[in-house]
Amino acid sequence: MSQDWTIDDAEELYGVNRWGAGYFSIGANGNIQIAPNHRLPDVTIDMQEVVEEILAEGIQLPAVIRFHDILRSQVEILNETFAQTIAEAEYKARYVGVFPIKVNQMREVVEEIIDAGEPYDYGLEAGSKPELMAVLAYNENPNALTVLNGYKDEDYLTLALLGRQLRRKIIIVIEKFSELEMLIPLSKKLGVEPIIGLRSKMMVRSTGKWASSSGDRAKFGLSITEILNVIDLLKKEDMLHCAKLLHFHIGSQMSDIRKVKEAVAEGARLYAKLVQLGVPLEYLDIGGGLGIDYDGTSSTTDSSRNYSTEEYVADVVYGVKQVCDLEQVPHPNLVSESGRAITAHHSCVVTNIVGEIKNTGAKFDISPAEGEHILVSNMRELVNGHDMHPQERYNDAASFKQSAYEAFKLGILSLEEMAKLDTMYWQILSDIHDSLDRENFVFQELEELEDMLASQYLCNFSIFQSAADTWAIGQVLPVVPISRLNEKPEVRCSIVDITCDSDGKLGKYIEGTEISDNIPMHSLRKGEQYHVGLFLTGAYQDVMGDMHNLFGRLTEVHIYCHDDEPGDFYIEEIVHGTTAEKVLETMQYNTDFMAKTVKKFIDREVRKGNIAPREGVRWTDYYEKCLADTTYLKV
Ligand SMILES: *Cc1c(COP(=O)(O)O)cnc(C)c1O
Image 1 (cartoon, rainbow, N blue to C red):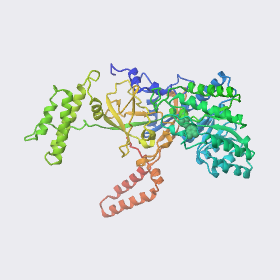
Image 2 (cartoon, rainbow, N blue to C red; image 1 turned 90 degrees about the horizontal axis):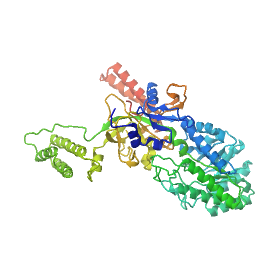
Image 3 (spheres, rainbow, N blue to C red; image 1 turned 90 degrees about the vertical axis):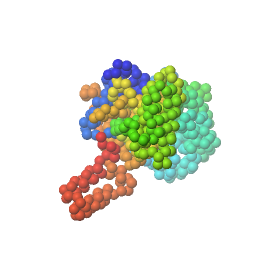
Image 4 (cartoon, helix red, strand yellow; image 1 turned 180 degrees about the horizontal axis):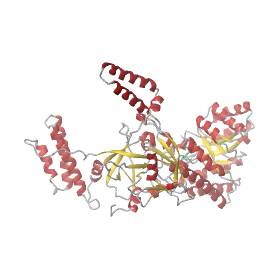
């Protein structure tokens, strides 16, 4: 292996420890290692071994790999951090968090969270009717909360009251005054008393992509005036005793701890004032927003956070306690709705690089030809112009290339001459790039040059299915080769997907502590697969993707760690990805009809004698086989 490259260098470049939260690291063998159980830090799984086992099972990449132990660990860490801090602070109530299923509604994920959270009475949150139907069926623990947010109609409210009949602690959070006007007569008619929460529209503004979740123009929540109106109405209807929870949510991925402190101060004060007015609140729900350090910079950039989970929890517990003690009201039970923080780390996408797109890749014989155009000979002189000032050589090459293009349009240059010019142009650019001493030479076009010369690695996945936020909101997600990290990565590249969309690429990469337009990866070897992992996809990315270009859902592999198993893991379940057939059916195609029609066309050619009968049967079978197969590239 390269003498001048160590695992520390790889760590420095890809920042695995910085974003890995203790779960991910680079092993001495150059493979990504996972320590999925926070209680057993020595039990590690080699990612390359997982991939080899997946391939041995006949699974095609790309695949989503879920580490269920990470999910459980995150649930335990959040609940235990709250419990410890509450004990230390002598806070006089408990933490009863809920998982907002919109962050990852996959049944296996929700089941695992419920199971891991059972000892803590950890509950679920729903934000829509179908989500409510899921949480009604899955949150069985009578001591855990079910918090219902989002806009509601009569069915939504009726289903919530059904939950009350089933003795669940279902809390209907009022987002809009009209929801209460609907709820009161409904609950009287059905004779079921609701537990009511009030969502406050907060004055504090978060920063980052979700800043608009609070402030006057926020989509959700009640202003102070509306809250007082709600209380009046509840009093009038003799239902004030139903109001048990005060809720706020100032936005996802809160990157700055100061905003958390501000929100807690505002929310706790509002809680105290309402209690003093006689509202019998028992819960203060601080919403979601606990961030993830996606880019590993521990900063206030949109893809990072400048605090730890311990710090977040301490600010909440001590912040609420201080206000309540000053206002002389009881400490409320604390509820949080952390989604991203629970699920982001537990899943990743593993896929393969299926090719390289490189400007310097194709070569044409550039030897001089009889009577060639002067532009061609000029460019050839530049090829040999090693003594020239690099800036001048670069400018000349660019200007010859431009002239050549003009000349081609006028019919002056032949195709061969264009191919020669092109070959020479890229040769000159790589030459300049290689000759530059990056540290000591200031060359303003260097970055541009680097970009022009960067390869594009064609990656077998769809951004729109597997990493929607990288496209939609410029989210940074770590992308790292899962092996060969003990070798120096010498190819600067960007990652493009297999959709027919120029937007289908990753635009931002972690390079050390910087965000870069491209990233060093290893050179591809003939006959050898190169596997890369896209990490921290467990929150939102897993479930928000679409079927652009009809690329369907990925095959999922569920991994549990177990120290008696070889490699310390076993595959508990494989959920196969969407087949071409299924994807087509969601777009209203009748695939039986399609298969029959194609068969009819083939039979017609057989009858005409253009296709031999046996061959016809083979074509028919082949078409049907492809319908039942993956939508991704098979390599
Ligand atoms: C989206 C959402 C959450 C989850 O936020 P995270 O940033 O994922 O923790 C929690 N509560 C409400 C009301 C939400 O809309």
